[in-house]
Image 1 (cartoon, rainbow, N blue to C red):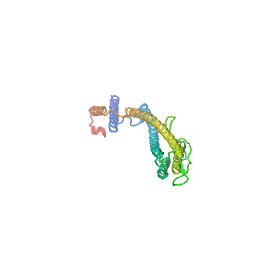
Image 2 (image 1 turned 135 degrees about the vertical axis):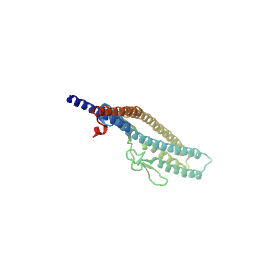
Image 3 (image 1 turned 90 degrees about the vertical axis):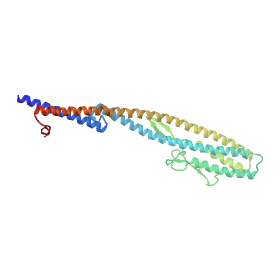
Length: 295
């Protein structure tokens, strides 16, 4: 009979311990708001959650790179817009300078404005963003375009290279964030300098030739802007896709880790009632008070 009572008591105590453990686990989930607080809670779900978080970290890094590429392309586009404005103004001056009513003195005054346009084109060509000269290729630490003299240059030398600056935006996916500065600007400086010199020498045929060349450079700038625009649209699509993937993974992690708080609170109340009932039943069975049991 004693063995039977002892076995009964052990089963009752084990039941209390189990109820207490379940109550503690439910309390922990309610307090943390998480279904998985340690890998042992659900090894399979914990492993999937770790993998999803790792994938999110990769996406977040790629998104940061994509945002960098986006800003670089935006600066490049803005520079091309500024270059187009310079060339458009030069073309307007060429039309004005071709007037038979202008004499050499008037054209010389127009040449002074063209000198300012050359200086502005130099500023655009040497644009810097994030410590990198955007039209210098890999030689991005120094101004890529250097005039022979600071004021009214007769030539501009390119000291960059044709290196393509690439940004990794996906799994084996890259995008170029720069243009060949020499290809874009070399003709610009040649045309503007020739136009200015033709104005100074009051040479109308040379002015007309320079005007034609400036028109071609405007077309080149438009094509360059179109190319940058196409890259920006592609980048937008890539970023939208990555953001969708990130949302999907974030939802998966939430489903794996987070609890239904309302359901957990109901379960907490039920487990608390079960634990209190187990204590009461055990106390009556052993003819012990709760205080005696705890001791």
